[in-house]
Structures are given as structure tokens and as C-alpha cells.
Image (cartoon, rainbow, N blue to C red):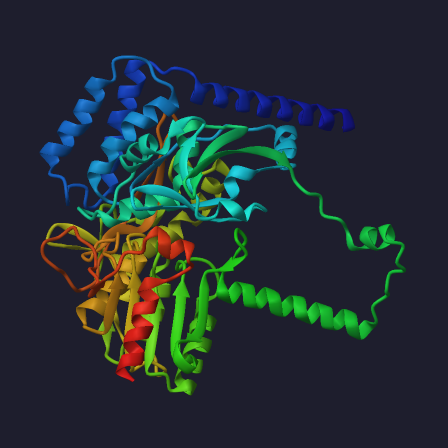
Length: 528
């Protein structure tokens, strides 16, 4: 029996290694013209089957032409990465920012993964921003802080001025909006560069700082090993202090409180920051300020309740909601937040248009879902199907899914009744735009910054299907639900515009100034 068990283990390892090798060969080899064109057809078919607003911004005749032209332009075999570079620009004609394409990464054996985890890539510790038509280092999570505020001129002798226009053609905003492009290409520059170049061990970056140019090489280096407390104590020839039972209990309670705090505020490991932040600012610290980096991780209900209890107790007359660089997240969270910002009954979103009566099943049972999860999903599918069927209905020949946020709702008893300011920019997207639409349409807030990257009239998101192209293995993400508020503006395809237009510049960043926030605080001081 033992020999049989060992034999099974060996067979599984060999199969696993073989499948990894086959997969890696598949994504690096040249694919035939016929197979590449077949992938284009299958992608377009998936979009037509599942995307409820495929022709909202680009008419069908024009979309057909774009995909046909792509097929005709493929006359030579291409690798997966080469195919990505010609496919991504065509996909942007959907003009829906939630539609995206990504390149499959190389797969590794357990031994290879173990070795990779021992290293860190210094290049990944850089945070970029695109301002004044140049790429800058906004901050770094590495040890060298001298490059903060430096302009990035070249990467491996390739000019940034050549890379940025290419990357801007590989993603889309919602509709005809333009502000997202400069903001997003800076925020996601690392992602675009890796998709463009693939796995690399080092990058030579040319910087310009104070009219001088210097080059710095970023490599994959060994991670600093964490030294255990006991080893550190022994190394210093210090007798370790044995904690009392009371001290151990206090330490345990402190760790639990820290965990609760991190969950409530949405801890972000990269940069040691939080998703949700609240404090009082301005003259005499009398202005409530809430910075939300997204509407994703953590226990948001406790955070908002505690924050608005503090605001209510302080009798604050002004509230600043900072949605800059907030890419969106959960509908439930923005609905919950909005209940604190209105004193009237409201309908947060309308019924969401879908193309199928069981959208959640279509999302989960995609060809990119692992087989083990599909089996689990298969067991639950009858329950999910019944739930979906009860939630969908047909109106005027179209299918609609009803979220609970589409019902009439009441304001929270702790709702803020003072003046609201909202900070927005091109990276204010998706859920950020949806809550901004409500505040703008009801004249509830003054908006400062620049037009949001997300559309005023809604977006196709909610839940997603990630479809893997059969030959090239590129992954296409598409939203399955049209998410809209009851409010509309004309013309369609633009974001929420600011009442006060302010665009930060490089000098603001270098001097650590926040011109948008400064404007609001100055205005409040004048009013008081």
C-alpha cells in the first residue's frame, strides 16, 4: 500500500510538471494565423452573448468593422504577448473601462516558486504618477527616497515618451472621458510595463532630477530574512525576559484589537496604508475629512458608524469626502455610505440590465474557473439558479436583475446635514462615480478636482465573467450587469464634472501640497 501511495505521488508530480511545461510552451510559442483569428471570433462572440451594453458608445457596424479589420491584419503567426498588443487596442472600442484583457503569466513548479519567494524585485517598490505629460516617481516603498519627485526618462534605454502613448491605447475609460488616461497610465504603469516586457530580472531606469540625469539599476535581490525575537536576543547576549501571564494576556488583547482595527479600516500591506481613513482637519480641526482609497476590503459598516457618530458629536458643519484615485468596489458599501449623506428616502440604483436569467452562474462557471471550484459550484447551482430566476424579470424585451439597492431606502438616523465637498479626479471610477452621481444630481455636494473617469450615466460591472481565449490563453474580463442610478445626463459618455476645476502639478507634489484640499479649507475659512 505504501509503495502504491508513493507511486501515485510520483505520477501526480510528473503530470503536474508536464502540464506546467505544456502550458508555458503554449503561451510563448508562435500561434498560427487561423488559430489567432479563431480567438478573435470567440472573443467577439463572448462579448455579444454577455455584455448588456456592447454598442452603447460604438455602433454595431463600427464594432464589426474593427474586429474584422483585426482578423484581416493578422497575416503572420504571433506569440500570445504579440497578439495581446494588437488585440487590446481593438477591445478599447467597447469604451467600457471594466472590459479588460490580461496576459497569462508563466507557471512555476513548487521548487521554482520557493526560490522566487526568496527574492524581491526592487522595481516593484516604485509608485508612479503621470503629470504634465511626464512620468514621475510619486513615492517608493524601498530604501532610496532620493528619487521621489524625479522624472522617469527611459527604461532600459527605451524612452518613456514612446511607452506611454502605447499603453494608453490598451485600456479604456467609460464612454468619451479623457481624464482617466493620464491618471490610470501613471497609477498602473508597472502593470503595463510587465505586460509589455514579460518577466525581467533587472531594469535600468534613467531619471532626471534638478536638470541632471542619472541611471539606477533595479534588480531582483534576496529578501531580508526576518530574525526571530529569540535569536535577536541571543545574538546580543541578552537574557530573554519571560512575560508574566498578565503581560501575555495584554499582548494578546492588543494584537486582537490591531486585527479588528485593520479589518475595519481595510489594511493595505503595500505601503502600510488603509483603505478607509477619517480625521478632523482645518482651522481648530473642525472639518470632518474622510479619505477612501476604494470600496473593497474590510468591515465598512463599523467604520462608517463610528465615523459619523464622531461627526455628529462634534457638530461639524463641513464634511470632505475624498474619492481621488478611488477605483470603485462594492455597491453595498457605497449605498451604505450614501445613507449617511442624505436626509431623504432614495433609490440607489435601478434594476440592472443583463443578458441571461442566471448571471451569477455564468460568472462563476467561466472557462477560467478552476475545476475544483466548478464542482463546488455545480453542487450549489440549483440554489443559485433559483435565486437568480427569482431576481430577474423581463421588461420591454430585455432582462433585468434586481439588487436590494434598487428598492426604496431610508437615510441613516446619523445622516450628515451640513455642507459636503467631494474631491474627484480621473481615477475616480466605477462605484466612486455612482455615489458621485447621486451627490451631484441632488445638489448635495460641491465637487472639486477634475472630471471622474467613470461615467455619470452608469457602467457595466456588478459581477464579471473572465473568459480565457482557447489558443493564446489571454484572459478577457467583462462586466455582466448595467449599473445605473435613477439620474441621467446628456450627452451620455462623460463623467461627473467638478464645480471647481483644479489639476495638481509636479511642483505641488514636490512641495507636498494638496491644492484641491487647500482650496476647500480656504473656502471654509472664508465662510466662517
